[in-house]
Structures are given as structure tokens and as C-alpha cells.
Amino acid sequence: MAADTESETRKRIVILGGSYSGVSTAHYLLKYVIPKLPERPSYQVVLVSASAKAVCRPACPRALISDDMFPQEKLFVRTDIAFEQYPKYSFRFINGTATELDHGNRTVSIDLGTDGASETIDYYALVIATGASTSSPLLGLTRDDEFLRTKWIAFRQALPNAKSIVIAGGGPAGVETAGELGEFLNGRAGFFSSKLENPKVPITVVTAGSRILPFLRLSLAQKAESYLAQVGVTVVINARVTAVSPPGAGTEDVSSKATLTLEDGKTIDADLYIPATGMRPNTCFLHEDLKTEEGRVDTNAVTLRVDKAGPRVYALGDVSSHARPAIHNLPNSIPVLCANLKRDLLLAAGNEESAAGIDREFKEDTRETQLVPIGKTKGVGALMGYQTPSFFVWLLKGRDYWLWMAERWWSGNMIAKG
Image (cartoon, rainbow, N blue to C red; front, side):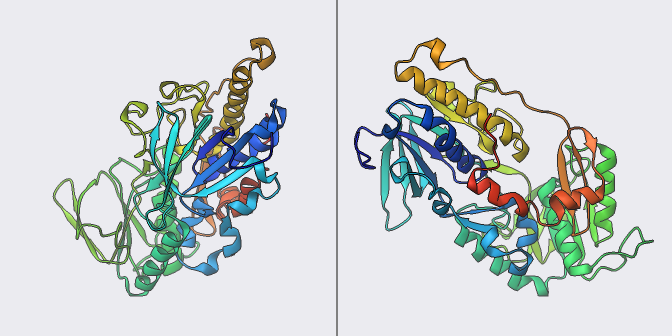
């Protein structure tokens, strides 16, 4: 078959989502799966992403303070350039947003974002890796990289005049953001001091839970709270935010003052407000029968197929229900998904069951694993059930929030052939 990207006979493997899971899956398929298929030139990987650039999202709690925190050419990377190593006929990048999945007719509609332009493409196989959006536009790609930069600029312009900051959410994003802002604005208490007295800018973390960092053991959460106190951050537990005035403060307008109303009726005023209360799965383009009650893609936890969506449809990453949303699950889930996709493609091509092999099975590692930097020198965490000293949290994550390994994700070298 001619290597024509517009060929009507093209078997498109469409991947929705251009962050860690989507980019890594595309690389894995192009490196290890498609070369093993019959009629290799008939397959094309199509990667669809709302942003033309990928961002090292874990770095946002520090990056939002200043462009000087990280080399911008490493923080933001053009996605299309990461795939120049492959034959042109085998890969296509679409800068657009999925607006509707018709899993009956096996098509996906894409908003191309310019002058109302759109495109509907058919897929032979589909991988849903659209991730999840943060409540605050400061903490990830809720749209594209330019929108994120615009929000950072607005926040930075307001920061010098802020006399108080409130962050809602006691998970890693909230704790890390509080730690970064606290150290940047207030410095850190002396070696023998357990608390920074009279911080220049008091920062408050409010959480609906009974403690911060619920995925870590209590002793680590308590240590994190003590580190926060050293940079002028106060933690308020059992305090759910029920209303924000004016509406849109912290979400649409990241630089406005806000009054937060808590569940018990008390109010808190803030010159700057950052909602870091979890993630919203990016599944608005999916039919409701493909979602769980939490809004994630209803995914087979063993095979990573989306059984209700028909043949050769899969999901992984933060948008999928197969495991807890965590980046450390990807090195295990991507090879499983791609192996099962390869098996399904071989069967569809007419291979016998014996030649196609058997399904690979995913098993989530549920051991305590989470690293949470608090400022540039401290942090708490655990790896595979073992407590990690503060120095190693800094070494692995806190010094640059995984930027040191971002290139390996974008190049496809992070996921070993499995």
C-alpha cells in the first residue's frame, strides 16, 4: 500500500490526550507494536492533544511563581517534534480537543480551535488518555500551554501585593503549592524553630479531610504539616469550602480577592485563592454509559479495555478507572495495554489465537507510594511501602519536580519494552 496519510484504507490507531500516558503509548506502539504487525504501512498512529506543547505538570507548584524556576525549553516541549524519528506515514499529530465519541460508528469529532474548524475521523483502535483537569488553571493544562502561561502571568502580577493566601485541598498539589509559595514569600524558620513566627504572607491550607496527604501514613502527614509551619503555612482540617465569592475567584480569575464560606458557616478572606481540590476527569465528550459514577472511563481493570465501547478501545492514566490516578502506575499499565492492543490487531488481521498470544493482565501496585516536596529542601514520602527520607524526596523530585526525567517521557524512553 502506498504511504499516503490521507488514504481511505488507513487503519488509524487514535490516541486522545497528549500528556504522559498518551505520548508514551504512542511511542510504544510505534516502536514495539506496529513493526510486528502484518501490512505495517496500513497502520497510522494519530495523537490528538488540546495543547501543541506538553508540560511537566508536576512542576507547576513551583513553576507558577516565576519563569526563572525552570528552563522553559524543558518545561514545555512541542509534541510533534518528539515524533520526528518515525516515518511520516506512520504518525499524525492533531492539535485539537475531542468533542464527541461515537463508539457505535467508531468516529471521534475534534474541535481544531481555529475559526470553528473541526474534523471527524474514524478509528480502527482507540486509546482514551485525556487525563484530568485541575480546579485551578495554575496547576496544569486545563486548555493549552498559552492559556496556562497567561494564568501564571496574572497570578505573578498579583503576588507582590498579596497579604494572605488560601489554598483549598490537602492533597499533594495543595501541599506542594503551599510549600513553594511559603518558602518563596516567607523564607524558612531557623534550624531550631518549629514554626515561622509572623510570616510576611500568611498562607492557609484548608482541607475537608481530617488530615493532609491521606494516601500517606499519619506520621508522614504530621511531618509534612510541621514542614509547612516552618514556611508560614497553617493547616485547617475538617473545613470544606462550600462557596466562593466572587464566583470564579481562583478558577476564572486567579488574581482576585476571595471570601470562602466553609461548611460550618465560617468565612475566610484571601487576597489570593488557589483551589487544589482534586482532579476532574476529561470525559465530557463520552456517552454517560462509558463512565463510572466518578466520571472516569469505565475500564476493565485487568485488560485495560473499555468493554462497553466495542472492540479495540482502551483507556489509561488519570482518566481511567483501572487504578488510582498516579504517574507511577504508567510504566506498568502502558505495556499491558499495548500488548493487548497488539493481540487484538493480530486477531482482526486473521491470525489464529495461538499466534496472537494471550492477554496481558494489569495488576496495580497498591503499596504506599507518593513523594511530596515542601519547598526546595524538604519533603515527605514513601516508595513501595517504605518511608523515604526528606533528602531523597528532594533528590528524586523536590530539586526539579521530575523535570530531570521529562525528556525520557516525551521521547518514549521512559517505558521499557515489556
